[in-house]
Image (cartoon, rainbow, N blue to C red; front, side, top):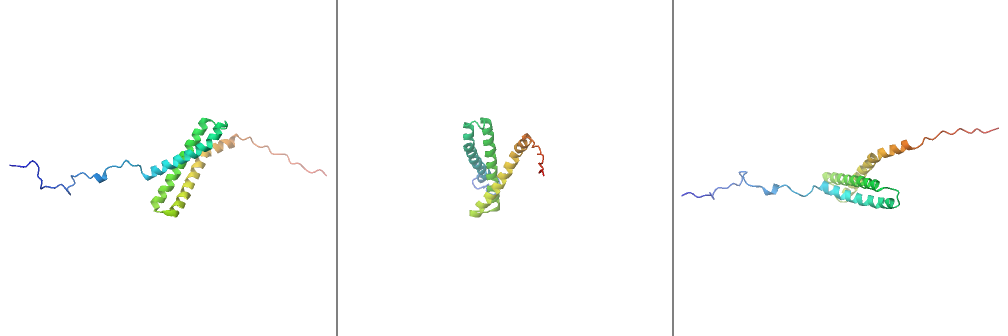
Length: 140
């Protein structure tokens, strides 16, 4: 008589068992989490700055939405970059916080210069040229 299952045989170590520890995780990476938090903070700050301008008709709704989206994206990118660089270097405590601040400030500065570069050039071209004044000579 044969048994339907061999209880003495073990599949441990043969590579045929399911390794549940390597199941894919649904949690976002730390960079995504930092970027999302930074984007939310940037959007809140830009909304607070744009709201009075929209109410006083100094800015249209479309301009406000573009400004909010640009600030949210830039702040999210800067926060993620600063946090991930400090994490990869292994800095923590106050040193890591200062390093994150420095890196995030540099990324946000570069973002603002890049995004505002076209607008600044367009404003420069739209300015009327100044005519040189004729020099007045002193009469003797």
